[in-house]
Length: 106
Image (cartoon, rainbow, N blue to C red; front, side, top):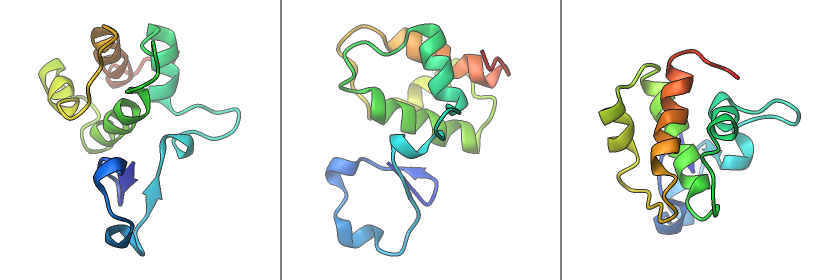
């Protein structure tokens, strides 16, 4: 989840520590009928496979792009360090972030 714009693991974050802060979950990234650019890029790159890690990676990617709209591949990979993907779609996820960074909104 995003807490005041910073990606934090929801599973490790006590409720009291986010009182009064702005919280965004993956459901809040886009709007009905208008996906967030990273969600659209994940679809275009077929970056989601089993779905176990997708929410956390989408949040990490959105936080990265908010603070650095043109990250390098190594910066994208570093942003995903706390997220574990066991399906093998990690490279497609990196491509999706780089796609948004390049300005491709398809």
